Amino acid sequence: MSDLEQKIFDIVVDKTELTHDRLSREARISDLEISSLDFVEIVFAVEEEFDIEVPYNANTMDADFETLGDIIDAVAAEIAKQQ
Image (cartoon, rainbow, N blue to C red; front, side, top):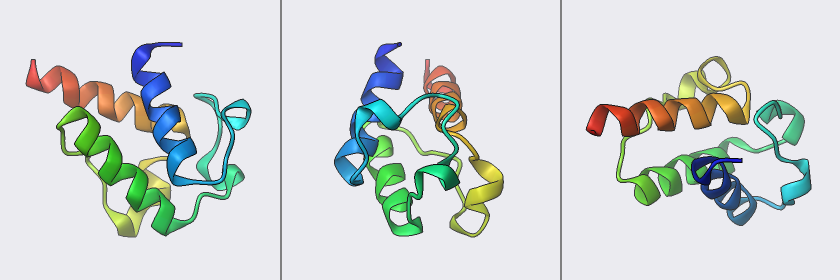
């Protein structure tokens, strides 16, 4: 697991009642039952942690991010743009 993945998983655990053992790149957000409010808090925390803006629209959350891997890939892409 990369440092990026670990940091994002730590944020998810901090903002939800989930435990690390339920998290993986393939874990579907809907299967994890992450509420829309928790998801917004996760996005804000990720943006603050990495000093980026996550390409996210609250109205299309399900279409933008189906899995935790989708979030990780979006964050990695935004970080790469800054470098």
